[in-house]
Image (cartoon, rainbow, N blue to C red; front, side):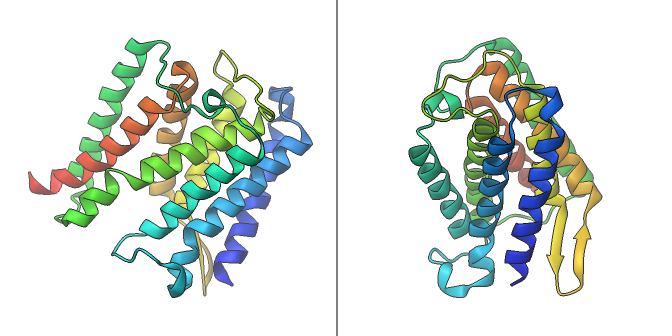
Length: 237
């Protein structure tokens, strides 16, 4: 019940934020905002499902492997149903502005290391390293920098992606990405972690810029995965 309440609230927040962005990008409409919100709500629900329903945790482990796999499967289904082009969701190895992407990658990985030294994480297990180096980046980048922006921009039916950075869409998805990490809901109601939300907002803006500036999810995915990994590895220093 708690995860359904949170997911519905999260979807409503996504809808309101997307509608508020309409004056800043004419490609955003009521229908695309609704699809965007519905997708993010469903993504949150299926990602959290294994944490609430033991039978849904098919892969087990200390980390939410099953939830991330469900997120990837949902993204694949949405891509198929709405006929989203691979390049519309960033699934291409072709790169624009390669130098800028490489510089941003180095800076974001360095930021991950700096945060690790600042917050001093516990010594990670092999499972922690394997999970942090793969699943969050794969599932979250495909959802928040791939499918969600494509739906919000109305890139349905094999429409081509924009050639420039759609800043209104980048900001909306970054704010929702931040809220997804910072906002919680439990028996005592809603909670908010401003530190987590702040850092993921910065990351969301950077990853969103990288995705559209490069035309691909490759560098955002690498930055996210390596940033998470070096954060954990600072425990060994």
